[in-house]
Length: 188
Image (cartoon, rainbow, N blue to C red; front, side, top):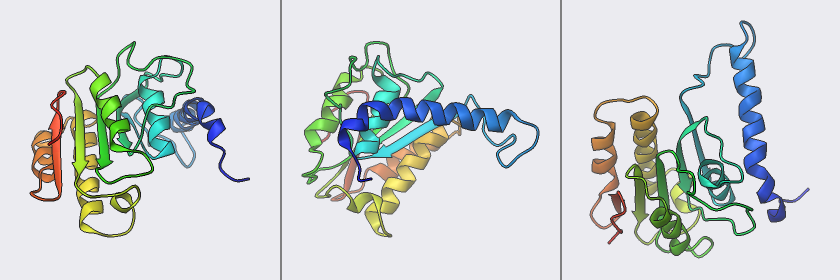
């Protein structure tokens, strides 16, 4: 079957179900996933509709999963059909990544989420002149930049690695290519 955007309202629940199953398998003493997942260090990332999904999983009253400790929303947005408000009950630390020339999920959609998230642990990575897919596929300098910043974000908020936040800021601020802002500061 082809992708069905009307099903997006079910995807946060689907992710919670999968997370429950993976955690149960990790809790077993034997098996492929035995002992591999730390239930206190769960992160989620998604791009496009996947970004919409993880944003709802982390911040929408309808489907928040408090087991998720950090989230990267890559070219995502609020999904209007979701039945609950966003950020009514807090959210984990979140990284929003958005190409300034994205015509599929407009930059304003990611900025709307970023502005509505009133926690100080929020970041917005503005990718100058980038579209919807290029920053997340292939092997190019922008894809590598997104990868470094996203990994440093998870290193900081899931693993508590000293220096990871400084790495995010260093790698996310590249003249002519990207700017990383935080705490409600708007991108240039």
